[in-house]
Length: 431
Image (cartoon, rainbow, N blue to C red; front, top):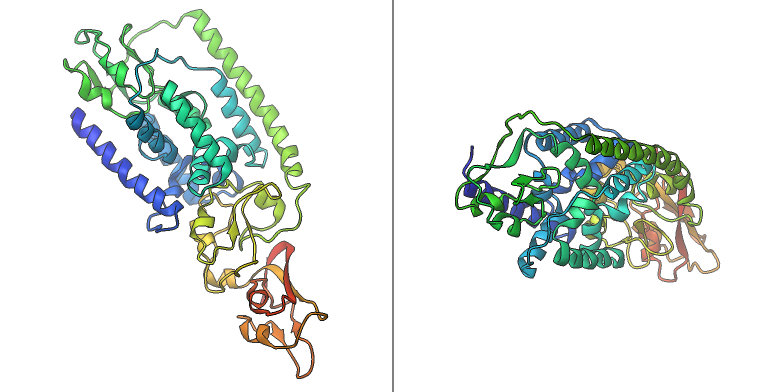
């Protein structure tokens, strides 16, 4: 068994490293290690909607780690969890009564996961910690509002969001309940001083009954070094014969049955919701690899990682008109030699494309207004694919089999005679 201080220091060092990578990536400063590729929400979304071997292996690995050691993910990897750790350091929160598992969290998780299985990430991007954190760091109003709400919640109830609201935390908690290694209280050594419970950010320690709720415990390991009698340990649980009260077993059965029913209803509702998400949307330019409006609108998690990392700053955040990120060529264009958005997207909403594939992906089609065109020929020179030709004394002509809709011609036109319109479905051109 590792020493208490060693465990706590190792967690803090790893958490600081991951926090640095998260903030750097979301601010577009650097993204050397794709830390968001091991975030549960995008992994679940990627596995369900566009399964890849790598996403399947990663999510199984995280579940195995949780089964072995509990919810280490929540205290070490989750960006929103790390932010709440900062809140707790600032607030110096006083001790509150031990929190009980709210049955509501199982229904929130069932509703969110059910709609995701049904084909839309609409609810997932509203409540999952990865999207909330990314949205807030990028300055999106929705993300900033939720971060403020979570800050207040942390002030009054500690990491209540993690223990009783977050769908990712609920899923991991169910696994952690049966983990091999747990936080255990030695009833012979414990003097019920309550110091461990006072400092517990998840309020999962019942010092009076000398027990720990390992389902909500986020494995911060603070309690291990606080106990003066070494009465708390993190070790393999010793199996004890216990009899579960009938009413508790019945209650769990009813909650489980109810949650499964919500999951089934949400699955069916997710199919219908996915169809309605894009009903009021206009045809909008999407990043290369997005596919089409319907597919992308139901897969994007609005983490804004692509927004922050786009060197041309043409990827815009979600707004009232469009519920997910999208392209706007008003001030710039899509660099022909860049596929950064495809590289950084962890959820599969933007398909991974090589640079060559990106250069052959048609996301839109340029058109020329001959009433405004002055026949300067700048568009011909600027087009990276030689899709625009111009005979002497004639207006420029656009080859639809070559134009990929990058917007370079639109950006260089001095009289705004060129406009790129989105195609209904992105396709790969042969040339």
